[in-house]
Image: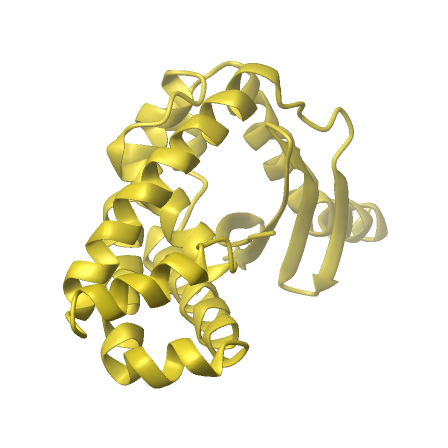
Length: 213
């Protein structure tokens, strides 16, 4: 009897993240934003996504010394402030709930987050950025605002296209990345994403990071 209980306990302990992954999939398929958001630790998710984007932008900027020379620290600060604001507004329980409930229809907060990702991922027209810095006589805030509007407009169209025709993975890849770490990898509306979960308690799991493409 004791051995049976031990085996059952181990099975529940080891299988718990798979059940959470199942619950996430069920909530997503049912467009149940509240249920899906309940499996996310937003206090950890926000800084993790923000750190990804600011690191990406820093790496991108290093590839273009002329832009870095003209903009310098002011450009980096302005971009990081935009990224921080976009993450704070979009990566919330309310926004995730609304996004799932409406089957991925992007609102302003989500569009700004997509723009922040595009900027960090080297999808900005750097030729225009240099021209803007010269025209605006070094007014970095004006340059960033101009670029933001262009990127938001561009990303809005791309997001809508993915919502309408992007595919979801029928069988996401599930795997442990440590005793208290678990990943779910696949496509969401055509975007390759990896969700990272950490254990809370013995059998509870919460999403704490989304590895962006």
